[in-house]
Amino acid sequence: MTVERFGDPSGMAMTDAPAPAPGPGELLIETEAIGVGGVDAVIRRGTISGYGITTGLILGSEVAGTVTAVGPDVDESWVGRRTWAFTGLGGGYAEQALARVDDVVALPEGLSSIDAVTLGSSAPVAHFALAHAHLAPGESVLVRGAAGSIGIATVELAVRGGASAVAVTTSSAERGARLRELGATHALDRSGDGEPDAPASFDVIIDIVGGPDTAEFVDRLTPNGRLVLVGAVAGFPPADFGGRLLSSFQQSRSVATFSLDSVPVPARDAVRAEQFAAAARGELHAVVHDVLPLAQAAEAHQQMDDGTVFGRIVLVP
Image 1 (cartoon, rainbow, N blue to C red):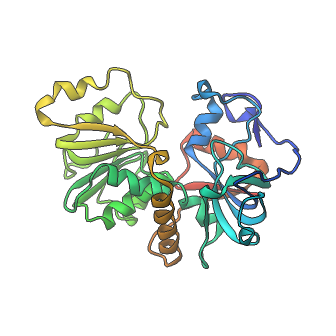
Image 2 (cartoon, one colour; image 1 turned 90 degrees about the horizontal axis):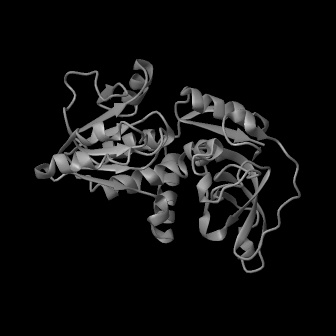
């Protein structure tokens, strides 16, 4: 599934291509499940086309399946193993996908490929974002845009980390109720309001949304509070949003960005493997909105654009 035209999902098209061959340091994976992530939608819209991304790109960064071949310098014992893999900024929406061996993690028994691509990127982002925010037991957390897979994982991990309150912003009471079932203590509307007993400010805000309202949430930080921006579903914050920090200088608030790319590979893989094992034991939940054929990837993207997805949509070849 390639991007033939940036913009709405109608610019995506199924194409035939030769089977890829793994080069040095690479594995070839016969995909069983493909995660549909927010970054895929950002790329498809053309939001980051200035980063050298051009039309003809095969979308998708996250797959799970069975290794069928390895590059000349890769241990052949990988062949036949079920794995999760990060394919980079693209290459995942395909029957066969290439990945670097450094971006592959073996799957434990009892974890499906569908659950693996629901958690494989999102749960590590949630884990390290909370660590980046220096969340301590007893502190309050707000997850902005909590209905996606990163937000859901952040809620569960904040609860496990001993947060005193875990509030979420979401678009409906129904979604708020589902997030409460996963551990949220307060369900707020998209502006951060809606429950009179919710904290007025928060020690930590994990922001998956970004966009023009980012500055309003800077104002919701406690003294010494930390906002970590892990996504930009609504676009980049306005250029002057840092003015809110300066106008509350004596509050010692801070704003940071976080990308999983900044985490060393061994640490990233260790956390991912631990989370896969926890999911196989039922201690971490993969919330799957729907499973669609690869040919219906445009429908999956339309649902994301419409804001109807709770959790993650997974594609299957």
